[in-house]
Length: 166
Image 1 (cartoon, rainbow, N blue to C red):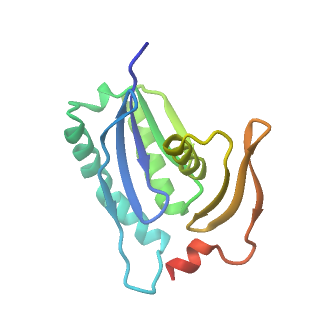
Image 2: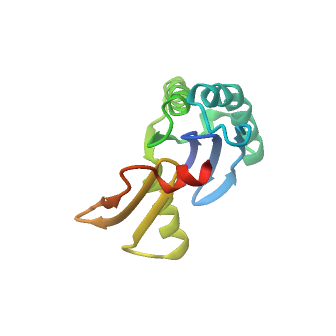
C-alpha cells in the first residue's frame, strides 16, 4: 500500500497549528496561540493578523520537526474549512490554496466539527457515537445517521463554549 504524507493547517479560532502525518503517525504538530487580555474575547481581525504573522514560521518548524526537506515532499494539503472565525479561516485557506497550487498537490477541506468527532472515534473506537459537541460558538447534539453527521439539537442563544470563554 502507498504511504501518504499529509500536512494539515488548523486556524479556526485563536490557535493556529500545522500537523504533518505519515502513515497514521504524527511527525510534527507545532501550534501558536493568540492570547487576549482577560474578558476581552477574540476579535477576528486581530486573530487573523496573529495567524498571518505565525503561519510561515510554523510551516518551517513543522517541516523541521518532521525531518522533511520541502513541501514538495508532502502528498496532500489539508485545512480547516469551518466552522470557525472568518478572518482566521481565510488566512489559513489562502495560504494552503497557494501552496497546493505552487507544489501541484491535492487539497482537502476539513470540517472542524467533524474533525473533533472523528478524532474522538479514533481514540475511543466508537462506531456510531452520539456526541455533545461544545466548541467555541457551537453547542450541538450530533450523531451519524444515513451516511452523514446530523445535528439533532443545538443552542439558539449562546453557545456553552462562548459562555465559558467569557
